[in-house]
Length: 399
Image (cartoon, rainbow, N blue to C red):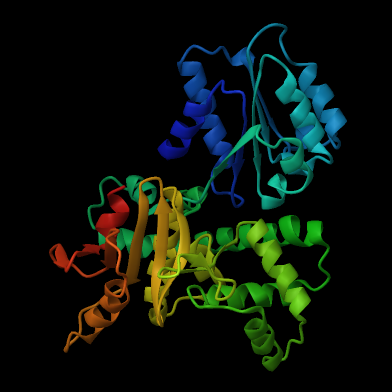
């Protein structure tokens, strides 16, 4: 079991705080395991197991719990009087009107409540209104490269580990499977479950094949600016007629289920968010590869996707940067200010044009915030007029 230390530390900081702890993220990214790790942490710090109540609502044992009222009654009947109880509700969105149950448990004096869900809808609408100011969201992603590499302590070849990471994916259980074919089947199963359970069942989309075509298109265009119209035009020219409204509904469902992440553009000079020019990134590049196969031309986009996810893990608000007519891969806004990132698989060529091209957009930024160029090139640390060129793997492992 890989320790998810950053997430575990976050839960530890919020322990016994009068807040509902909500862990969200794509299916199989490790939310249930995180709860197990935290429960072990509680017991190792003196909490008796009788004070821990853990319910996975996908487990058939709890199939009779269908409504918020039934969930509340079940939990209430198992609470110990005047004793601190730690209540864990896994995949709580499966219960109709779970919001009322969670709110009622939150109001009980001796309850510390933790819930998970595999859909962003968990924190929209009624729940957000009902629990406004009373919850903290912990956004969980599949394994980082650093976490993945920690599972292979005897392998010092980080380039090979990175190649395996992009192929096998970052879902924790994939590490338990030895054969590439088995890993691909597992990733395909995750995809099918997300599509059928988290999207089709909830949204009641009638055309699964069309939805899958949109997913494949989006996976094939990670890091590219995608307008709804461009998606419609491409799909239509490929023989699948689809409306703008349908594409918008599909994209909303795909981001809600955390299979895709959307980020908009930010005008660095004008200091304003732009309404057009969104980009999308996959929650896991291994999942993308399982659906599309491998293409060597994808290396740069895959690195960009991995850098984007890593910035999210490190707590940044991430946008695409626009500076004049140039584009900066990422504007990362964190607690200590703004940082700029450009990701390129390599900047080594015969005439140096690749390096000049990648530096140009960063050089066009007139402020003095930190600027980074991340590449897979094995070159010594270099600074280009204040722009730090780093090896991407070193950066990924350095957090």
